[in-house]
Amino acid sequence: MSSHAIRLDGVEKSFGAVRALAGVDLTVAAGECLGLVGHNGAGKSTLMHVLSGNLTPSAGTLSIGGAPYSGSWTAAAAQAEGVRCVFQELSLCPNLTVAENVRIVHRSLKGLGWKNRARALIRQKLDEIFPNHGISPDDEIADLAIGQRQMAEIARAFTVTDGALRLVILDEPTSSLDAVTAQQLLAYVKTETARGTSIILISHLLGEILSTADRIVVMKDGKTVADRKAADFTRNSLVAAMGSEAREHRRGEARKASEEVMVRAQPRSGGTASLEARKGEIIGLTGLAGHGQTRMLLQIYERRQAEVTGKLAFIAGDRQSDGVFNLWSIGRNITTRSLSALRKGGFIDLAAEERLAEEWKVRMAIRTPDVDNNILTLSGGNQQKALFARALASDAAIILMDDPMRGVDIGTKQEVYAMIRAEAEKGRTFIWYTTEIEELTHCDRAYVFRNGAIVASLGSDELTEEKVLQASFAEHAA
Image (cartoon, rainbow, N blue to C red; front, top):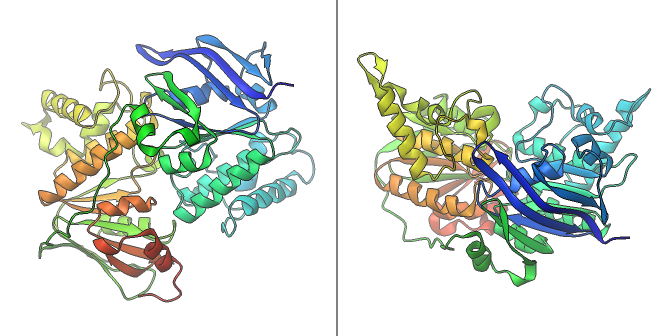
């Protein structure tokens, strides 16, 4: 029997003039965790759609367990062969419960009592991967926070009924998870590969890839450009293989804060501590996911129990639900926040709108040949760049960011971090919720949330993972 779980040879795929895959060869061994990295638009997600049967390649062959697959490789065929995928854009049906969503991928759950079996199946897997997850099988997906939805979809992918798992593809699986929950998942990945299941882990958090993967493949411009053992990479050599320069951000001396307060807000869920953001400050919101950080951003945006001075812009982390306008072009998605400034004689100046869209396409390095293309022609990370462009191109004095770096590659992150610091120096205020503790190094100050209340305020010299986690699990508010 072959030690290969799955193999692709010479796979090609184009979308119009965009060549997403240019002859990709990829092999995943049985019981191996393969790390797959590359910039947004490198072809990673397209390749995973091919592997999961959702896209038909224009050329190339696929082998399962060492034998060429001769039939039509569809999503149903992939499912039957034990291939599952957790996509970056989550795919659970929002109007169904967690247990009912399990039935969608497990057709053997039928007849009397199928729902009880589905409940038991997903509850057991959630408990195994994410202890203390707080999710009921009867919860409707629409009522769950995005991190909980991500946990439910991951648990569903690892459930087993009538057929063994062969390969699970995890596309940015920790993008909405806090540090503790992410570590639970990465530990489970090692447990699952030890059982013989193969896993492809796609992440822009290179530390996750280096610590979890057995082997790493780097993609660039629709091709694989590096393939070797994870132990043979360092963070710098991995970034270099992707075609970026590794730049380490060093925290400088704390900047002298302005006296002008732009935002003052009191959490609605209790506690006595309040949030304050001054002109030109970068304020971080942190703590375990789902403890009131997003609620605070929405509270400020809606000016409820919040004193706000200046115009606001909001960058959503859940771009499909709260960010992009799916039927609009890339350009219109960028300029929609700036339309009032583009009016000329009561009408929108279309030439000025096009110039603004092109300017921010270039500044954010959005990978598209034409900003008139639909926003959904972009990869997830490039869609997120468009949301950044929308906010930064506007006249907003205060930018609210709800874990906005989900699915954004390291090169773009570095550029955006620099842009945020430059805009803050000009006087813009940023309030930034992040599940990546490393991102707090870019903040002047951070508030730690627990159970909807602020339990700690940490200065720039105190923003360490240890102190954030200590405050996150503290019994009493500070």
